[in-house]
Length: 483
Ligand SMILES: Nc1ncnc2c1ncn2[C@@H]1O[C@H](COP(=O)(O)OP(=O)(O)OP(=O)(O)O)[C@@H](O)[C@H]1O
Ligand SMILES: O=P(O)(O)OC[C@H]1O[C@H](OP(=O)(O)OP(=O)(O)O)[C@H](O)[C@@H]1O
Ligand SMILES: O=C(O)c1cccnc1
Image 1 (spheres, protein in one colour):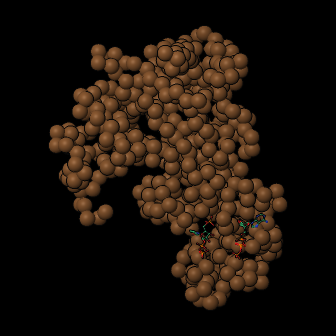
Image 2: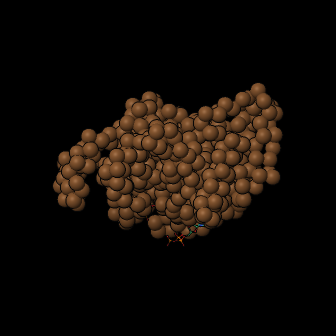
Image 3: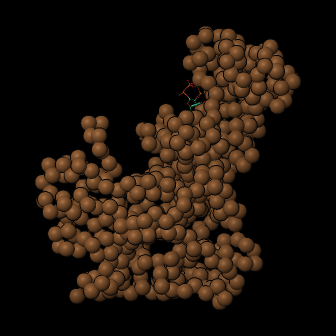
């Protein structure tokens, strides 16, 4: 890989995208505008909401989208024709991209990203867009799920060593912080994204000294802020007593933050350690725990009365251990015909859930004026006006009998302009601002959608007009089958 000094992300795509782009080019339809929606179909971790992340990297990717000399050279070796290669050489992103903002609470079957671009361009970027959103949204959601059950404690992301390689470690760390974590152990992620770095020390340091006391003392002589890892030899007989001993000896010379437990029965050991620290007068000392934690283990530990102030979470967060894929898709919903008019397109499936929703859309969050709470997402055909002075009928797009009338509401348009005719028009937010967005989104989401187990399904409804467009296309397709 490193032999190419001008390597780019342009070939970070599936071969079939290039093959399709070549077909479009040869047929002269590559510049017809196409519209694609990016969305996922099922809620990850059976959570009631997901947290969108990935936009920052999409912006970076599209801003730098260009085939380099070695990219073209490589494609030449794969026998693409010269004329097509000439077209690729000059290609950059010239389309429109609208997307929800990072930290936005999102749901299945709502467009998260809408690409409106020359067909070949829109096709070539599919793989990268999905690659980015699928991972980052998954991790941000997992992190938020963990945050929901630990509202008051510190959460540290410890996953780099177990992440699926470098990119996953750093973008995963960022996504974890977006989802509600307080810090990351990955220093490069902290540097790149201005995240709080955080961490303690490892067993190897204790092993290097061969003795808890010697190791803690050495650490305390170098670092003012001290967390001592107490489980290398014997947590209650050696680790905790020696942490207390060093804290006493060093007195004001250090800031004794607390201890970390990384094995054994965390409920039992944390209670015992709490008592020992309190009896020694270190009532402010914190107990930090780690060891293959996830939200289920944490919940169990909470019910056992574990005395934990801070959780360090690695493997099960950064690898999205219990659901390794979000399954987001990128589907063509409309394309320009030879007369320059848009035609809505659908993908038919035997499975109703897999049927795409055609047409260019707007996505609104409906906020009930009386309660200030979110009633659901309402997706309209792009040209439709959503009048907030009239009551709104919302109905389930499949089980249409499920319906509700909202008398008084405000609408929030969720798809923001990010690129317009290839030009970046969006100003990125800091991770701090993104976290605030998530907090304010969650504040207007009813508890029923946020609960840990079996949350209610949040309404993602189609307008009457959009629903009809979809039904008509389904009908057309089934009539074609009969012909
Ligand atoms: N009281 C508890 N209730 C539920 N789960 C717990 C409790 N204490 C620890 N756990 C979890 O149980 C698992 C224990 O892991 P494991 O069997 O590897 O033991 P360990 O303590 O790490 O052993 P080792 O000493 O070999 O490191 C971890 O996921 C840990 O978070
Ligand atoms: O358990 P996770 O959620 O993945 O969190 C990260 C783990 O990484 C470290 O263990 P490791 O055994 O790699 O190193 P150590 O010797 O420092 O404990 C740390 O002690 C945690 O247990
Ligand atoms: O700082 C820590 O305690 C840490 C960092 C990475 C992995 N496990 C623990």
